[in-house]
Length: 318
Ligand code: SF4
Image (cartoon, rainbow, N blue to C red):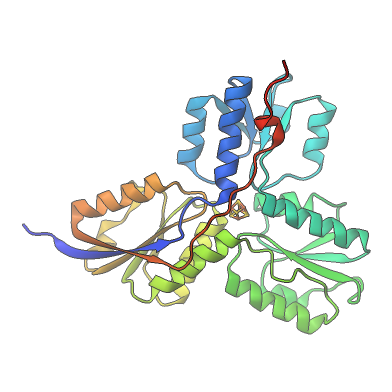
């Protein structure tokens, strides 16, 4: 029986960002340099496939520092950590490598600057996300107040509207965040903020690429993990543009083929922590069900590369 034709619109950019590439390389280099096991506090990036591949090489993932035995190296994840974590590692004389994405560290420094200047800080982000926990943990409790929605921004009460600043999580919806910032600026005209929100280039570009294809797609698959913030935002962005059948899949085995039985055009993208091999796996699975043609839609190119920590690049002392 002949297969149904399917056009795949492949969003570009998609998948790994520079912060994720760097975090993975930090774990790989640390294993090479110090030998296994190397402990990693939290999933280094939000992707099971990546985590399992690193486990095979000798990484051991734990939730908290007290699960790390004395005398072994430990790595902190790309999402950033509260200040108490490196402080505790130092107290225990653990060798640690911080894989926090430099764009998250930049938000930490902004928060510290506002705090030094006597401003209360509004963090726009999602409660419970490791990046939010890490950012709030840069300053004493109570210095940062979390706002998750425009409604919360409407009812927010602050200490002094003239001494106020906002920062944002790096992986939010660009459009929703603009709406929240507009509320804050209307209610607190003196609020300070970054020139542009802190949403990172990778999040912005992946959302732009989805916007470029969503209206043409009958359905759209976002390859990513359920706990990946930027992947969840890609599903939302597609749905807002009318692509109701936008779905998150971790890999090909998760695809609901019955939901795709009648479609002609399928969009595919991947969150910043999903490796390209999983996108290829989904496309290969599509070929089993359809006669596939692929059109890649590129909205911009990316050339961002972050340096590795010196302790992993410096030659060993003689
Ligand atoms: S999504 Fe953005 S902030 Fe997060 S690791 Fe990637 S580049 Fe860094």
